[in-house]
Image (cartoon, rainbow, N blue to C red; front, side):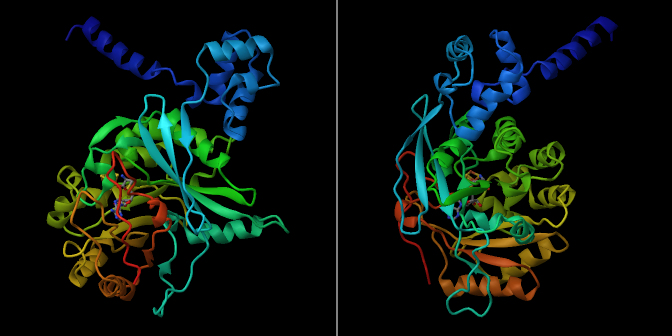
Length: 414
Ligand code: SAH
Ligand code: SF4
């Protein structure tokens, strides 16, 4: 091959990498803001200020960034810095869980859910000897050991209600899982990193004075790893020490099992980001029926990816298992699951399926759910049954409504 040709190809590849598409304003890191503020005639240190205004105070209108020179504020406005979404006020449920319906600039809507008081709030289940019914939702993905670590560091005298926020990464979803409302209409579009982060900023603004944002779970609408670049950028923004500085350990990305991107996430964030896997079956036939993505990344490959994930010390991978009556809820399947997961540091969240309008599938009875749990407990796993909060506002995280495909409010509460 002539060397000139090889060079051209190499140069193209390099230029692809070295010149990624410019970040939308709300997705800029402080160092990128520094360049931008200098370009607009300000100073480099103004870059950090802009980033802090956005991330710490949730202000994206430059006119309100009062410590910046006026000319810079005008330059920032002219260059397109401003809000990327607006919140249509959510309804509050009895337990203070609330859904925020968010309208994006093109009119598309996604949802983000605030779930207060979940982490560390483990309770005894009614009528069950063990402690493994968690009156909680997605935040059951947060690891217990972290809670203990954090307790010691808590400032004396103040007690806040810890809030977990569930965020969306796509409008709709391409994965087509048969029990999921988000998958019903297919993928409409990816969210940008600015739109992902703006959900967190909007959520923070909705918190009551006695609430603190504690955990973030990527369990809303969409498959985060199918929108990897935006998801990764949003993680970099949320964890940046000059901004919200959310500990990566308090963030969990949930995936239906996109094998190459699981490896990429592990590598890019050194295993610090919590990982939740939507497994839902312990054999390929059953899993493919529930989750078409299993055809592309069957269980053997997925398990290899989990074993290779560079998990942080004392962390566990969360295994999500939505129980669907008659499809994956046999005790024999629990046994299969136990062998499949053997040797992996996991905890298992069982989620009785929330019915959706688009499907006749539904949850098993409580007795069946408890039987499934029992098999797993007896083989030594940590197993939690997730009760969904906020059902009265249809806010159950992970089955967010799209295009009128509202989940019915019928949950088997045993
Ligand atoms: N796409 C990602 C994250 C969003 S879904 C994923 O699949 O992991 C978050 C969780 O909610 C997943 O475990 C998903 O399987 C679960 N879920 C979706 N619809 C549900 C329903 N109707 N009932 C119970 N769990 C559901
Ligand atoms: Fe997409 Fe997750 Fe719903 Fe499957 S469960 S369709 S991957 S959002």
